[in-house]
Image 1 (cartoon, rainbow, N blue to C red):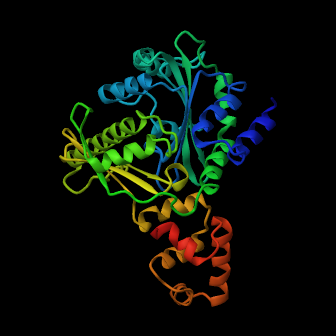
Image 2 (cartoon, one colour; image 1 turned 90 degrees about the vertical axis):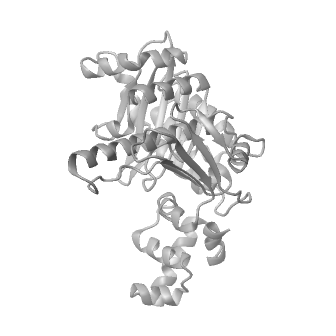
Image 3 (cartoon, rainbow, N blue to C red; image 1 turned 120 degrees about the vertical axis):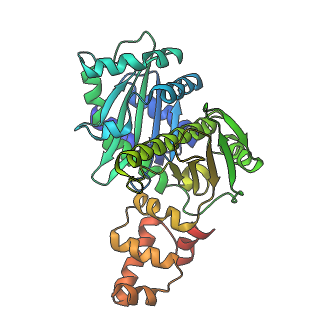
Length: 369
């Protein structure tokens, strides 16, 4: 397969009627001749949400044992190849658990430090590519090679980087080709308590209902172990943020901490049938104790930034949509923004075209249903 054909196939993959639960295998099959691998994960997010643990994901042959081993290693030693570290590189790619052939120095030491976690999960290393463009970060591609396989080479790394724009297009098309309004009823908010040792201590019946929806036959095909792993990873994020803030407060005085990244997931209806938010908060300021994780259907104002990212709305279209979500009529929107009624009408037509909404009522149902 030629590079151009591969990139075209990736961009258009979500338009071929492939079930969500089978997309991971289809993406892996398309990429494997270009960059050989034994397992794949593709995580999607929006620039407004930030990468964190992503908003939705596709998996193929990525074993539960490997995920658990990496979470345990991260809890004890930190992430061997953090997305923030990838974001600081000119080419946002790295090898976790090993090194590309020819790598040395810090890269070699970093790979050696995490190798035991990969071996425990039956793997040798993972090539991680941060998916970003001029708007921000849209996700992460992880390609795993099994234990005993040849290391990822510099040529593998170069080839992976070329996949970035096509994978971003695939993720965005997956969301925008999905339902605009909810297709499943809302569930009550649920609570999960993650213990100090990273084990899940408590799952309320409401949270269990969310878990069952994700992994059930009518859900998005999420493996049963993935939601508990996601909750555990969010708890790690929350603890790391709290500890960083505590260190900043200690060195610079109270009230000076930046607050760190917010540990949450904001997932669109394409993945779960309706907007979903999962947020983690430590129960102590130092981030040393238990963490509460809330799973809920979020209010419209919480999903608006991600919604605007996915559908490619302009800053002015975002302003118009925000006012509509607050209950303003088009004439009120025009007055508040200092625009003519004709210009507001043009912005509404652009919103309907980009989102596929049949009118203002359907567009508002995306936030209020």
